Image (cartoon, rainbow, N blue to C red; front, side, top):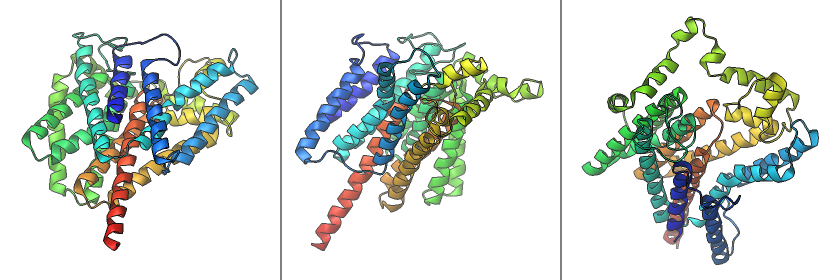
Length: 423
């Protein structure tokens, strides 16, 4: 039953964001929210059966602290009145929307209580990746038009969210697909993994995101480095993997639609700087917003300016329109130094948790799974230096909940085996 609810959640995520499906116009009663409510009921059942509210983990307290900071920022925003025409009801709705992925993390971590469900959820995430990667170039070519997500600009496309955000989502899962390609024993599974990797690369090119491309190479560097450090591959194998990725990547680039390819190549062309184009224009305003964001931070460094305050404040104070395009800068400006510290602490604790289990597990399959997660984690959060958090954070927190719970289940099984041996 739990896995059915999780699959329904993933399908609903895709259906609402890609197909534009809407169950009702009533706020809070979207199909995705209904799936969350059903999962909450499953959590309540788990609480009653286990006689325990929630299981402890490494990030619970930091998530709660960050949530308090974000909620408190709404009161700060209303109290100082820097932004007109705001009310507490709107702020609470915004807070709930921000908190949804974290709520999902809590729920899934607590209701997934066996390895089979965890593995099936990972399989569901791979199916979502397959559908999303397959449809992206088709959207760009106008072969299919899905809901409200179609061509972004001159052929750039994504299956959901903005093109740059979607690219960061692809980067999160490329190491996992690459692991399936490199280490699966059966030919059919390796062939399927190779096709999926090519599809994902094609989708990445179709986004036209240079940040996504750079984040991919950061993820690849982390992936190969950790494999080498764990003595799971040697230098000749690393070279072979790089060549394989370049070959598949080249084929994918050729197969990708021509318009986003041209855009991507143009965006990567550094000669534009030498021809007199300023850094602000070359980075699509990101360096400009970075400077203005730092100015805003120093105006209120402790408690920030409040949730969703970046865009109206830069418009009001500097006469420019745009978001931070940097998740860390957004936390700094809107929630102050403590907001950023708690956010970074959450990421640090997740990384340390998975790294600890990577080092301690004797099982090769688990090591490869954890390495894939860590490499995707690094690539995804590197991409947030040029992106605000968006819809992919839902998938990140679902993925994180499953990896953290799977590692805990393995640890509990090991402790149980040890206890039986002592007995």
